[in-house]
Amino acid sequence: MASSSSSSSMCASYSSVISRPFYNSQPQFAFFRTGKLGSVPDSGGRFRCMAGQTGFFTKLGRLIKEKAKSDVEKIFSGGFTKTRKNLAVIDELLLYWNLSDTDRVLDELEEALLVSDFGPKITIKIVENLREDILSGKLKSGTEIKEALKQNVLDLLTTKGSKTELQLGFRKPAVIMIVGVNGGGKTTSLGKLAYRLKKEGAKILMAAGDTFRAAAGDQLEIWAERTDCEIVRAESEKAKASSVLTQAVKKGKELGFDIVLCDTSGRLHTNYSLMEELISCKKAVSKVVAGAPNEILLVLDGTTGLNMLPQAREFNEVVGVTGLILTKLDGSARGGCVVSVVDELGIPVKFVGVGERVEDLQPFDAEAFVNAIFL
Image 1 (tube, rainbow, N blue to C red):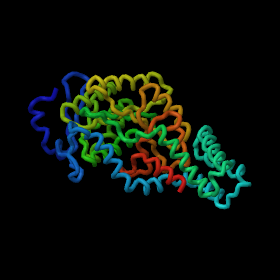
Image 2: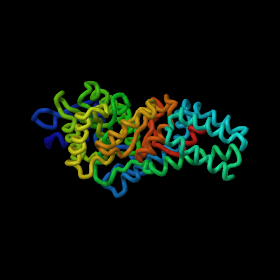
Image 3: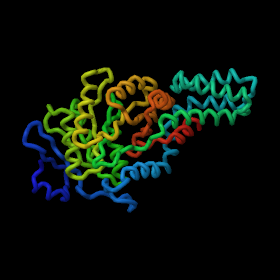
Image 4: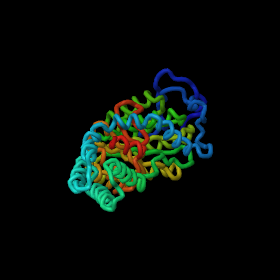
């Protein structure tokens, strides 16, 4: 354990990143400070960082959503440009709509949805709902059809994916595991999430649990410096990911951190041994803090479209995914995949990446998303 002399210097300022081992035994783990430990922003005076306070994590989730609401529509509108271009044909189809053109218009609308990766099941469901309402006389104009289309998509997203806020429980620290395949943007998403949580007053500790990729720890350390967060990483190349996460959560508990963000190694969903490692990581942190991890967020690359579904199914079966982070949606013409994933798996989208800036990881807002792709 850390010595008493080390503990007494916890609130000292550090001009550069420092490290010290947790234990004398191998493998060792290093705790890196990137700023003034114990100096946490109070989010403009709205509340201070006290995770033991009743409802702190609930307030944190709501505050993130509230403060993001002001700019989320603007960012979504810019972030879904390619998907919106695919769906622009719908406006042209409905501009001079009349009842005699119903079959042709719905066929072309179906094609537009499929091209944007809404998926056959979702597309057929939406189109048949519209057909029924048109033939029954409920929808009498192109404007009404478009509004009904948007409402159908919104209903699909909110029925099965309504819990979009982070569910962090009430124990300190809350633990969030970030999982996914190689190249999906896990480490970057973790860094951006740390930025958003830290900005709202949470005291964040990062855990470099990606022990397979040599540069992963360095990459996460850069994010720690960029967001002024602390980080735990292994000093030995032979350290197991579960050991790194265990020590990080212990350190988070010992030093009073609010949230421990755990990076993990990228892995193909078809690699059984690596998927088993995730189970070990999950079990390891639960032994330190009851109920942890509070969230297991699966990062999915939006440019892969419906190809993300097999990945999501496997990760969900192995570790029980609680939420999704969809990345690179600004470069994808397949934004409809968001709806398909939520509908099939019943897992809410919690954040979406719609740009390269640190603030471009946005809390998911179903209504803003629908308005952005059907502008």
